[in-house]
Length: 231
Image 1 (tube, rainbow, N blue to C red):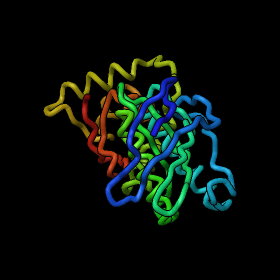
Image 2 (image 1 turned 120 degrees about the vertical axis):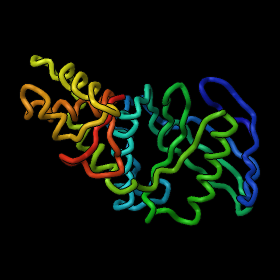
Image 3 (image 1 turned 135 degrees about the horizontal axis):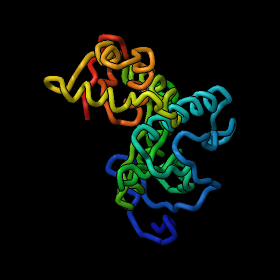
């Protein structure tokens, strides 16, 4: 098959063992460039055979993914980057992946689909998208949900992502305090108490966690007893 990606034409095989795919074409879809964290083009009720409830759930999951991509320092995110038309054993089908992201110099093609909304025909579409990604040298993932606590912690950290003036020098106080500890780790509450104004220190710990200057286990709730590590 031939498909248009990044301004050039490439050839590749859309066949996948056991998927019944044969050939296909990728054509551009209406898409805009979005920096991670901004609203992306939402799925449309009736488009791609989805209901209003499914569209709402996919928008919610897509918004969560954009926050995660922002945390991962995605430098660019394309919403609905292209339309993929392909043939398979049962006829023809089409699919528009949700996002194409640049993360750490690599490219990720991403689909967002809550686990309870994944249908049998979606597996074929995801397989086709995966084959296109492989042909382009990209990685591909379907985001179907979050591990326990990951999204709630990310959501909390993102509340402090906006730039703020550090009039009390909290960043230096926090990094100095934790770097002087054995193993360069402290509990959230102990680290906050090591600053001149603990209440302000707590807010700045969250800010430094978002900006990846401190680290925490995203798989556990963020508590006063949570261990914070230097990066």
